[in-house]
Image (cartoon, rainbow, N blue to C red; front, side):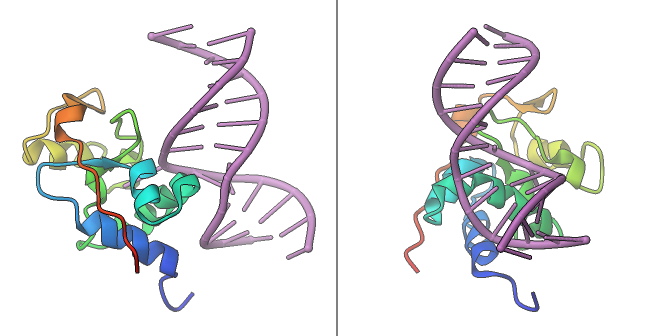
Amino acid sequence: MTNSSNFFERVYEVAKQIPYGRVTTYGTIAKAICAAKSARMVGYAMNGASEREDVPAHRVVNRKGVLTGKHHFAGTHLMQQLLESEGIKVKDDQIQDFNSVFWEPETIST
DNA sequence: CCAATGACTACAA
DNA sequence: GTTGTAGCCATTG
C-alpha cells in the first residue's frame, strides 16, 4: 500500500477537523465517512494516524469516552496527558463530562 | 481465497 | 453494573 487507502484518508480528514479541547468517538467518525459499520476500522486507521502529527488521534475515544487506545501511544499516559493539556478532564482513562467535550464531525461527501 | 486480528458497538443474560 | 456473545469490515499473513 504505497498510498494511504482512501478509507484511512477519510478518517484522517475527519480527525484533523477535531477542534482543540474537543473529542469524538470512532462510531461517529465512521458515520462521517459513510462507514458507520466500520468503527473498528477507524481505530485501525488511528493506529497509523498516531504517527501523523496532522491527526490528533488522542482526541478520538470510544463511545464511552474511555481512552481505549492509549496503549498505542508512546507513553502510558501520554494520551491522557494530551487531553488534560487541552482542558479535558480524564479520570482512570475515562473522560469526565464527556458529553460537554464531545464534538460531532461533519459528514464528508467527497 | 481463507483465517485471524482489532484504538468498536449493540444487545442479552 | 458486569460479563458474554455476536455483528461489523478493512488489513494482514
